[in-house]
Image 1 (tube, rainbow, N blue to C red):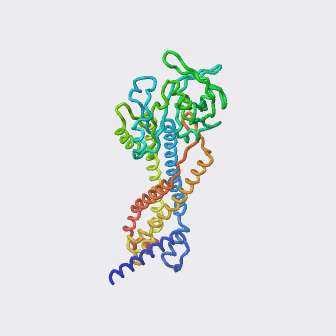
Image 2 (cartoon, rainbow, N blue to C red):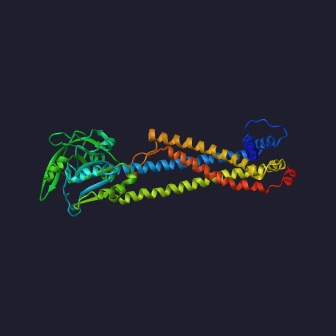
Image 3 (cartoon, helix red, strand yellow):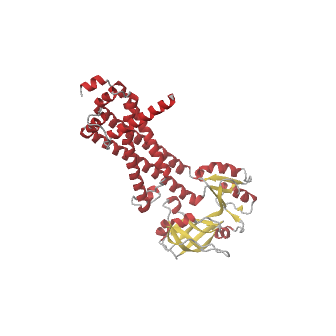
Length: 435
């Protein structure tokens, strides 16, 4: 019986707090002309807190929008750079241990037992073979050093297919050797060549050289100068013939993992599978400066989020404090009628939560709209020479939107406890007398 009474009182108190909070927001509700709720509503309409409440709502909205956009841009930027770096070098590369001691690649056997074990290793998504060969391209008035990248029939062409600007990918015939290559936009501009043109290329072999006349089937662009300035991509069998290798020999294996976050763990598993004459390097080890720079961007976003959270918190707390000062007389009336400080405090916390919620919803809508617009149109452009991409990349995620909303609301609600504590010091006799 006692528990039922306590529960009934608790439910009644919650309804009372929600009712008063709604009246403070100016919502329609039935109340007597001389009731505290009625005076509250009249005070809010004619008071000086309304403009500040609007300022607080839009401050929270802008803060939330900045946080969402910053995180989406960072994730998009990191993902795009990683995708391009991995597109050329895969997540993990396995080569001959002797390769580091010579200019030319030392071939590895594609029939080795390690290959099948690598494919069956947990976390491995794909294994493909490659070989590189240095040379130079000569036109009538230009000479340019290049690196021929030969790939086999099992090569994942999705990356290059997404980077094609003109023409098509090279073909890899089942029989014979493919004579087509793709070149970067930067090289095609330097050499003044286009799709369908012949590419006269010379490769050093010992003290002599060998020449090849490739056909340009397509032009690609990754916007990454380190790759676009040097690479032409074609048939692995061309490199095998240039080096005098057998058809079962390649420069190494490229391993793609299912999740980039697991690259170190997968690399450790693969090291246990390799023979003593093979070595393994991850894409992070191959490009330490690039990935260290990407990691530094996380710190910038953390700083942005911290500053924007502080802006949201200060905005809501400032508006709530002004509102409490404006309603001091009403607080005195409520206390006279029997409401305790904790219950009145919850009324104002609900009011502050409403301010924060409006700002969060407006900010999320604004941020999602801007991100979606950028994804569809790419209207914000970048200098490819400086940023390795021509448009601002966006990685819009529901988890990002939800995390920012929940985090902002939690911080604002916790911050509201401080101004709500002021209510305990309000004395009904003094506030009612000066009303």
